[in-house]
Image (cartoon, rainbow, N blue to C red; front, side, top):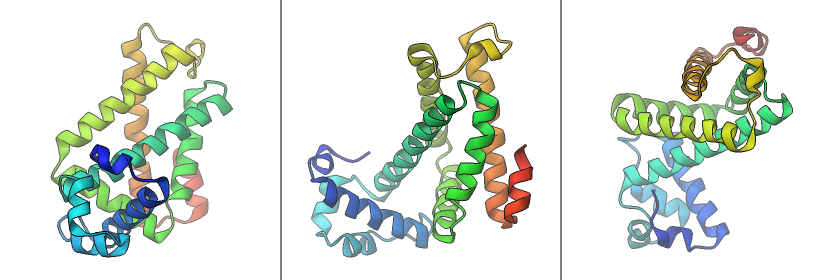
Length: 192
């Protein structure tokens, strides 16, 4: 994750750097992504990059964490909208996620991130996923976003397990749709 010096930057400069990172990780796989291109696009000196990030992998972790934070906020919003119904939320999240990420550049970034996580950093992926699920379960405990009365569950572990299953199905469908360039009408029918 970025160093404190990154977070001390004004928001405009952080956003400019984030856009530069996303642009490079969209154009290239992790292995081919270039720090030189990132710093040129962000218009910062090479030394500044290393004041903000340890290395290229650290920059990618930042983009992944940002991606997952956005996803978590959307889940929270949809849970509220669906009055705590986790299954309706999953269907709406699928629709949102596929439509949002169906633009060519976003699909490429998503694919490059997923490939990096799958092929070379499985442990990072698992840690982020577990953190995400723990956060979601905490949302239920502390803020009651998931209506557990709609579910036949006996424990918090059951909620976590169910969320893991739903998320695996959701991600598998989203990845499959993105790779196959499925038509808009077929996308809508895939998960319902």
